[in-house]
Length: 475
Ligand code: GDG
Image (cartoon, rainbow, N blue to C red; front, top):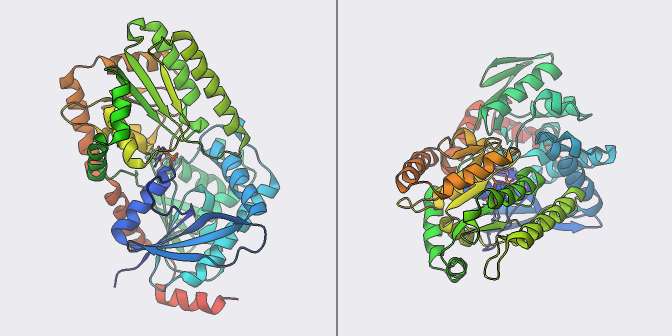
């Protein structure tokens, strides 16, 4: 009998047309659609009293277990510790780091709550796959409740080098908690190396045996690099379908023959939007022949609205877009179209297909799925050009993109110009090389590689034995 896959993440997204933006949701949903199983996590509701038991819904062979959380805890766990402490630090931005003990306590409490509410839903042969920085301590809390089934952890964002990580007052505890997993996976090699360095510094009793194993006491913890991919065929099909849709046709018609530069990012300071807007303004200055011949469409749905630094970046971008448009716009041309709207995924894929240049310039990114989606959405016979930040995990695989340092505005300006003027043959060659890479490591093989490794790596007791002990341990 094959084990059931149980994915756990902070937020569960029920499949719907205009799904919320976010790379994690795209990845988990695709894995579960192919393998079946359960997705457990916060359903989006907050309550002022005891939130009760998770609600269960089954759709297309996937069980969704939706947990409610207490409002006061959520504020400190999610906005506070996860997004004001861990997120900036893991993206190497310690100046944005904000630590409060109460937030850390709430983070621990929510992880305890996740463990308590997940326990009764577990079956003896389950494989548990925990996603991302919100839930690092979850395996430790589940182990305390007696769970011994294999638990894997995948970090969607970068893992910082120890000299940055140790800014966090509780960094040793965090590294120790990661050792309660059977398998810990990262996006790129550099993240794994940073993790190994942290283990060496924080846990003298642990030994790095090789790239795939850390020994700690009687146990071994598997480690690995699992770069997340995209569903190439599905994106191609969506992009083609969307091409004929009213929204894409209207957008293309409104360009009246101008070339389109596109950016699609959650509104987040890590995505380098302020720097990108400044580079585009500089581009119109340095290459004036492009004025009234290109349009830059930036789609940036709002995320984490309650975090102060997100309100600030929103304000800076509104100012920057206003300045560029005020400076260069003509009666029939707006240089930047800046939208804080959320679009259906399929429509987005149609927009990506229509763009001559995909501008993906994060200051730091675990992977960046938009870069991969942009390539998959192109017409292979007449593809656009990807301008990609060297600070995105995706740059390791997509070496035929025009790679730029996002802090180097001159490099970004010249890359945009090179992309807009690149001959068809070169565009085809670069695109074909990258599409092949995307096909080899698509979303299915990402999930399969992780789950297969997890199945082989269990270092606790046998599953059956484990559930028996967990059931006995239930309060
Ligand atoms: C984290 C890591 C890593 C965007 N706008 C809309 C929309 N999106 C979709 C995109 C893409 C996803 O959201 C964004 O994924 P990214 O990978 O670019 O970025 P994060 O959200 O920061 O994701 C990242 C990822 O996890 C996966 O491991 O790559 O490094 O930070 O799929 O198309 N989707 C819809 N409407 C929008 O307006 N429906």
